[in-house]
Amino acid sequence: MSSKQLWTEKYKPDKIIDIISQKKGIEESLEWFNHWKSGKSKALFLYGQPGIGKSLLIEALAKESKYYLVALNASDKRNSKELEELSSGTKTHSLFHKGKIILLDEVDGISGNDRGAVTAITNMIKESSFPVVLIANDPWKQKLRPLRNYCTLVKFNKVHSVSLEKRLRDICDMEGVHVEGDVLKNLARWSNGDLRSAIQDLQMVCKGKKILNGSCLETLGYRERGAGVFDIMPAIFNSRNIKATRKAIFDCSQDPDEIFWWVESNAATIFKTPEELSKAFDILSKADIFRARVMKQQNWRFKAYMVDLISAISLARRTDSYGYTPYNPPKRLVEMGKTMFKRAKMKEVCSQLGETLHCSSRLVKAEYLPYLKQIVKSNDLDEISEKLGL
Image (cartoon, rainbow, N blue to C red; front, side, top):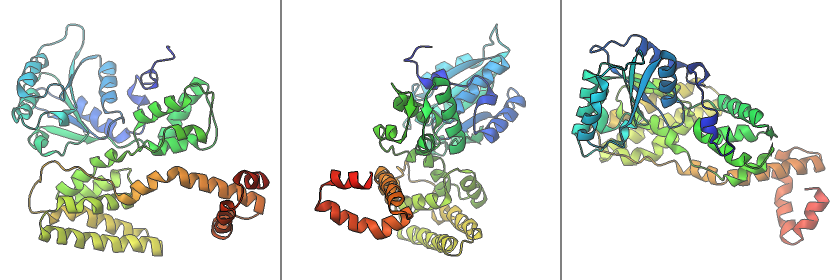
């Protein structure tokens, strides 16, 4: 293998069984494929954030089933005329394969100005002699609403950080890279469930190295990956089905507390009228009461009540859609992200000082650090660091 080859391609799974952390989505997709019938079955619509294995599953499925994969990119074919020209390939049989799988990727990237594009895809699904698979990050966009009636929706979740860390460690072992400390755990967390970007980051920090430690991650900086939450936000604000929204929140790997802050930060953008906004924040205020009781009383049953209230917030809306909504991350999460390395360094310093002073790092931070900061201001930092063994 070439040393310049991308690790995302080098270590891409060839078999369905090797795709990690998507058991439910894979089972539902295989169930659809095994029972698909021409002219009677809907298309399969896989959705979820980038880099979690949606396209990979269909590639592996076609290979294992000995089907020919016809992969099209809807965002490149942005209007109905181009999509209609592509649909001709969905009717002709292959001489060397058992059949075909028609894959239409990035469906949410089709032009919103050409209403005929969705109609063209719908006709493709109806007339195709072979299974049709659609892929998108966000299936809840208003322009895709007519299309969803002809599809079986299957959600792919973010890759769990534990599974992601294990995969990164396996790659390091195969590349002969020795890993120290929690560097892979941190890298897995920062990727926010995006396996592809995590592997790309790993290749970047491993370049020219055989030993990987915490300092190597400083070259990456903090990457905002709020896009993963877009899978759940449209459902919360648009579903109007409390049971479905509640299930989506609990299925999501995002922590419910974090989802609460995302909803709170974007509510004013979604609910335009004073009546809607008042009702929405009344629901959120009650959810916040239960959220506080979880922390104060350590009674985790209250978290379910909080999720129930968040799931009902779409009922505050009186209209179906306000068009495209750019969801913004909560300010408190952004600030925490910006200070991530600073807080990590502070924790490391307190830990080392604790060994020297024979006390816990928490006590160092509370009792010793304020005085040390004043001493540093009026003395030579290198001299103090040398004396304290830092």
